[in-house]
Image (cartoon, rainbow, N blue to C red; front, side):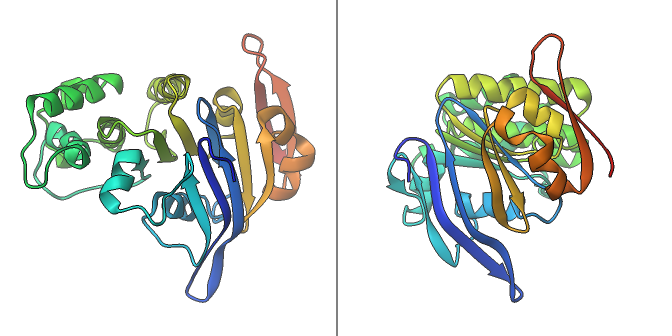
Length: 260
C-alpha cells in the first residue's frame, strides 16, 4: 500500500447476503484526480462510503499518508477527509451558509459556536463553488444543482487533505459541471488527493489523471487515462461499442458509445 495519498487493499463488503465490494485495491496519489468509473451497480458509491468510513468493510484496510483511516477516531478522520455524496439532502430549516459551517465542526472545540475564521472559511468555500449568492437561502428552497454546490462547499470548508466525491456533477448544468471539474483539478494541484466517481466517460477522460474501472464490485482495470479508457477495456464492461477520439484542443480522449 502506498504511504503517499490514499491506499486501500482487499476491501470487501456485503449487504443482504450479496457481495457488493469484492476485494478492491486502489491507490490514489496526491496532486492528481483519480476517477472511479463503472456501470450502475458496479459498487462505486459503496466503495466511496467504505473509504470514507461511513460504512465498515467486512475485510481489508484503508490508509491515507500511512495513517489507518479505519482505526482513526471520527473527529480525526473528519479533519483528514471529506465526502460529498450524490444525493445528500436535509429537511432542516437552515441556510446554505449554516450548512457549509457544518464543515468547520471538526476544527473547533466541542460545543463551541462558529468563529469569525469559521465564517470566513465558509464564505470562501461558497465563493469557490460560485454559490456565495445562496448564503442566506434556506437549503430546502434550493434546486438540486444548487444543493450539490452547497454540499461541495461544506466539504471544502472542512479543508480536507483527501476529498471523496460521488458524481459531483449530478444535477449541474454544463457550465457548472465544467467549473466543478476545474475546481477539482485546482485542488489536486494544491496537493489534495481527489477521488471522484463519475458517470460520464468523456468527462473522466478530460479531467482525470488516473482511473479505476469497477465491474460487479471488482477492479477490472486501473491506471493512466490513456491506458484504461480504450475500447478493449471498456467494451466488455459497458457492453457497448466504444470509439475513442481526441479533443482538438486538449488532446485528451473523447469517448463515444453505440450499441454493439
